[in-house]
Image (cartoon, rainbow, N blue to C red):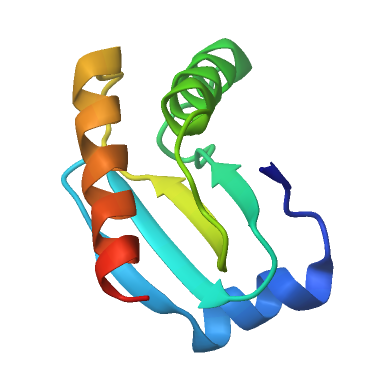
Length: 102
C-alpha cells in the first residue's frame, strides 16, 4: 500500500469520507486507489520522537493488511502512547469494518 500524498484526495477524504472509530485510532476513508495516510496530531504529542514512534507502530500494524479499494486516513487520537498490541487490535477492527463495507 502506498502513501497518500495527493491534496485533492486528502481533502475529499476529510470532507466526504466515511468514518470508523476505535479507542485509539479514527479512520476516514473513500473508495479509490489503495493508499494510506497516517497522522499523529502535534497537539497530543509535542515531541517528534513520540509522533514518529506511533507512526511506525501504526505503519507496521497496517503492513500486511489487504486493501484493494479504499484510500484511508488513520488519525491517532489517544493522549498516551499505547503498546503495539493495542494499536494492532484497533487497526484490525478498522480493516474488518472496511471489508464489511465493500
